[in-house]
Length: 490
View (tube, rainbow, N blue to C red):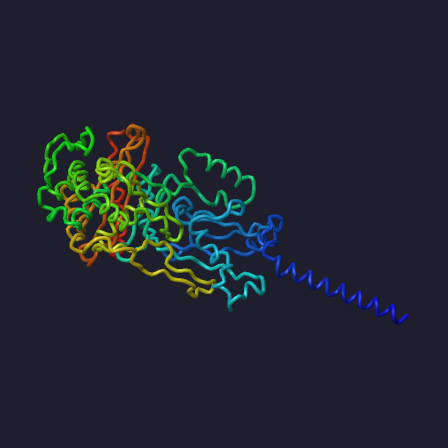
């Protein structure tokens, strides 16, 4: 009898060991795959079982969390949703996250290991901390001025502080309210279908995810290459450029908007004021492909790695062109394309003495108790041009505003530099042109420029003759710059 009891006891011990081994296998080795299984709702329930941290603008929360009483308990809410949607993106229980909601999701949801009291705490306890906050660099007045200026037209505005790369405004219109798609019900599903099916693409972030032909605003890049590579010794020197200009290896003759022959053999400074296509096309060819590509890259073109912290679409300057194509690219046409943020970076590099700072949108992330988790400081992206070249370009851009095509950007008592652009659009240029304006501004009592702005307007409802960088985009840039300067005076 004792023999059978021992055998039974040994068998029970073996079963117990097998159970322990299997439990260890499931809990240790298969935990991650089980967590990721679509049938496992525990992570999702835990994720929405506590309020999400907030995104802050000017020290005030523009997001919140609402207790729905449902299994996915807390639903994201937004204040002034359409105004800030290009920044916040959305945090949806159905469709996931985008933009800052996505880039800082670990902090906002409380799952970032840096929020834990000790290393590996979350992994060991399989818990999450209270959600932290993400403080943006946005200036509320600048954001509101940009949004009001666009007035619902298709377009975008990007404004940065040239000295440290802080993004002061980032607007894309038409916009949408992220709160409409935050939940899981039928209302969210219907809103998603309506928004994604809208031909005006309100969910497209035109400021950082859409590239446009930059048109004549790209002439600032070409002018930097011309001066930095010594193609022209002085902005006041005649350029020996005919008008019209025959594209190399082609019978095509490039003309200027004005019927006047004032652009013929014009100086570089006059060519920027009057936006002479012929001069900049010819000078781009004289700079040469390799040096034009090198200069464009320094400004940020062809860089697919820019993050602010969300990824920015790469602006494009072709690296393999014949001379005729190079001539057109040098005036912002052919295959040249840029995001509004990229063109704000161009203006910022000039304003900051040739040094381009990396643009960034999140200044600081904090834990729920307010303690700092991470900070973002000003970081040099590239020394784009010499300080001497930048100072000459500044004077030329100021002349564009004081006596050239950009007079609508003037601000009393401030120094404003700018460049207009009207980029052709559509097959055979039959579409309504895009209106561009890039600029920077410095108050009379400031030691350095305080803001650089790029505006693009693509309003298909407007009269083609009314579309121009100086007429449509410059007033918007002026209102944004004025908002920044007025805030600095407070």
